[in-house]
Image 1 (spheres, rainbow, N blue to C red):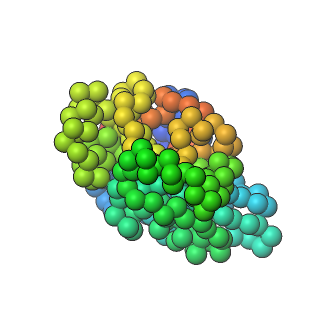
Image 2 (cartoon, rainbow, N blue to C red):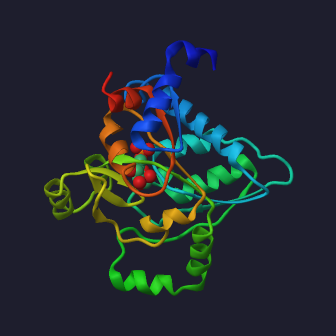
Image 3 (tube, rainbow, N blue to C red):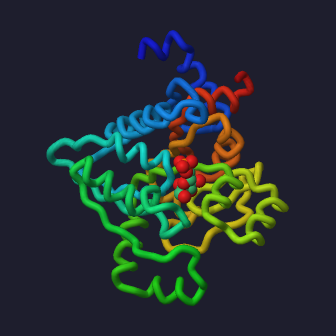
Length: 255
Ligand code: F6P
């Protein structure tokens, strides 16, 4: 905390909170684009913040990505008398196993002494497969849990980076370029105004359902994500942001 005072991070936090119209912002020192340990510090800050939010019974929906994987690594056991259930926010989004929401759920549950349920789904579903999977009892059960999640933890990515990382079709890449997509979260791609320009068809939490959760926390940093963070935050209910100094300074234009 004293280090934060000295380095002016609290000033960045309050400026960013106003600029992006958020309910809370936590900024950790450094830029995760430059130094890998900064991502772990964001993970730690997110895990600590989550702990302060917990009540007796908690259902937590999480997305994938390397940042959320760091949050999972930094989780510590919960207090006695608390219950935690982790569910993936959405089905397959084309990530490597270690960065999939399913994997992150199970790691979080293991580290926190909680439970988890998984969605076993192929990536990039056809409409027919999607509809028939939605009717499966096992899928329905997890879907209900996802819809009753009071807490949502998610990553935000740069649109192009994410589309390439997911080996998206050339036609998708072209569409994203034409529509000037800058951000990605939950399998949705957004332009600079925060409008959805494309989405991956998969089971799980849909963007407009976010408003049903009481606590939505994004964990995203690195100066290269500043446009993505700004664009995503133009949409929807008030959120909490855990970020780093690199992204914060870039966002505020004083890097
Ligand atoms: O694919 C899951 C996801 O949470 C995306 O929605 C997001 O854009 C990305 O991961 C963030 O990944 P990273 O933390 O590795 O930048």
